[in-house]
Length: 94
Image (cartoon, rainbow, N blue to C red):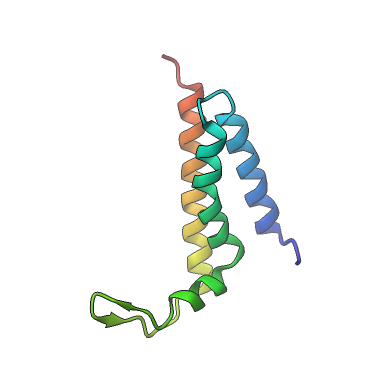
């Protein structure tokens, strides 16, 4: 398995999320359950497309491939928003 820049950066963002959630009750579980699906989108976008291609949804079949870049972009957007929300929740003054 090759570690690309995107994969390494996603692990760094996940580590920052773990550090932000450390003092919270069940913070590590929240990060694990929140980040695992997002890391799948970032690390394996072509495989995610292959799984969804050809499936039926509400009477319609998915008959066109989604570009891997778009799937990875959606994963990155959600991962950064998730990490930012944890960061803001920890450091917001009450």
